[in-house]
Image (cartoon, rainbow, N blue to C red; front, side):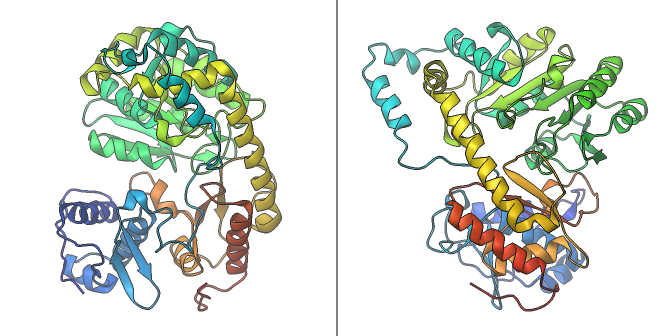
Length: 460
């Protein structure tokens, strides 16, 4: 066992995330070699003079992120492989991973190979790699993007679209363009972890606002605008991550009215907007002068293509383009060309429809197995936000689920600031799992929910 004692930033909050980041930093630098056994939670808590619960939470998040692995009865170890390549490793061959909020098409799908073959035959192929393009993207790619966005009830001119390297990059560009260190960013009370990571990177403050079953509460937004002078709001109006909630039309209109009255900048993440069969207009349709609409093709088409679309308010177009130029200059046209061809040929619609259909089937399966612990109704989503019955607590449930061979997301990954973690977990229905493996994982969770906490888990 190592005598590892990490260096934590004195002002870093919350402490458990500072510990996760220190762990990741020391693994990346080589200070902690692969396979190293970490100190026990109590030992590290004593060394750092922090609560044992803080260390426990940090180890749980680090395991969810693939930095470490826990072995029942043995301890916590630095993973032997690069965390970004953990899927498919021998070590995790028996793990049923329900912690990844996406759905992957079958590996024998010929679409990509066929597209690359056609691209290789083009005489103008060199123009996609040998010529500097405008920061906002090529004209043809922006036109395809505008056509794609019509599917999600957003009518925009191609000139209003900026091509980014994925939705996460789009959010980073918007925040870099519009916010300054110390500015306050509002979010839902639990939110996409990528936005809190960006806030830490850009030294922004984050405040979570309460939700109900219809999403962000308008009176909470109103009160925050009147008392806190926020710089921006980040929200997901359709299938919010992690709760899976979708704002009804009236809620979107109410929020848009408040946004316009306070002239609040909004980042609306709509990466899941393709999943509903009949999508609602985004908030950007009601407050276009304040809203940066952000989406990408990672969920709807393929995560490795890293293509995103940002629609800024008309007055902010130049600022976003300048930030694009300062960061990546422009998004790789070859990647954007693949997506554009799929949109123009109709293959993008076919791929999205397959994901809608498959997600609906998996959602029905999850309700059959986990129905007693889920809300009576809810929209079809990649993931479920499952409230845990008493006396279960999230940290214990995640740990015991892992011992049974199932990975789910701890609520800690979605917390805003120093809020108390809700007793809920995110259960994803996609990844690269077959329906059979998904069913097996869901049944293990159902069995666990019927087992009193603290009873020794069965290790599969």
